[in-house]
Length: 71
Image 1 (tube, one colour):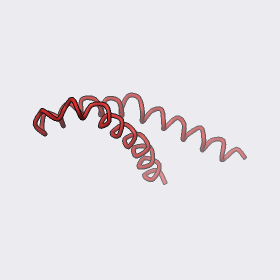
Image 2: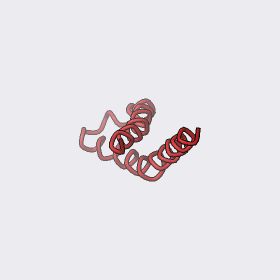
Image 3: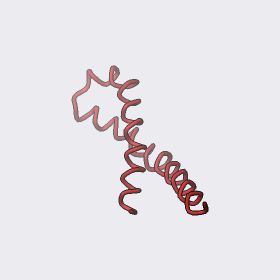
């Protein structure tokens, strides 16, 4: 169950973030080669995931689990 929880947290964090970054940044990045675009995207995505979104969703899901087990 722990791996499933991790997969869920990563997925609900990464999918909206990648979508938003593509919507807002893709037009600015198209002139650059793929390896530069990938580098720029990872500079944005990885820290946002690690320091903001994964801790946030982990806390949300942990709170939900605690309430679920209480009832």
